[in-house]
Length: 217
Image (cartoon, rainbow, N blue to C red; front, side, top):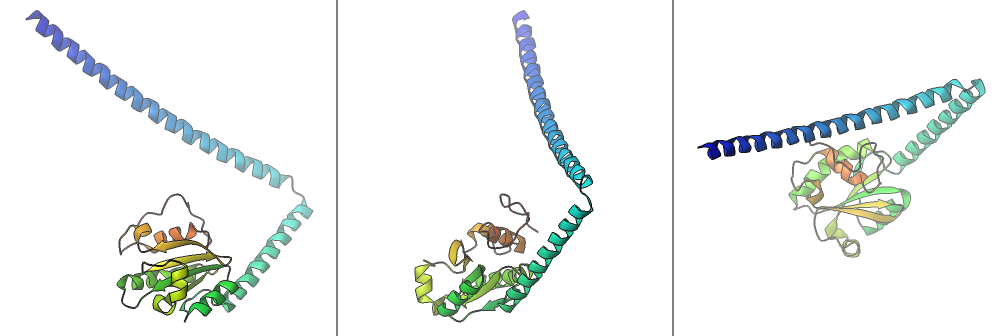
């Protein structure tokens, strides 16, 4: 009977020791995370302090120069917006054929072109989202084109799946969004996820994290 009791005691001790090691590992992981967060906070605070110190050293002439530079940037941006609107930016429109496509790309630095077919239901889903994004991103021209009216272009771009979005920058095709695979392969994807995917090709201005997709809303 004595050996049996000893074995029970040894087993209990091993389990307790294993539990202790797990708790200790968890504690160490938590401590490391807390230290990392604290370090990040300290770095941000340090950067803010440096910026405040820099602003404190500016005299009136420096502040006036900053103000004038800001005014100049605002005027340039306003002029750009007028040019974009004159070129059809801000709206999601249909173009008739290949000639129009090349004309759009020549006039606008950033272009998103949706190649669609009338008999493809998913194209109507894309239409809905692109109307929203066209109004949201004045810096980019959003258009759609019937793929059947552009056999040369679809062949040249190797478009075989409908819908396909061609993402064009400075007259060069940077990327394609083919079907809904990159959008979660579901019909109820959000406008934000499409916006994020387009932004990865750098054809729209985007302030979010390009490495991590936004949460589904």
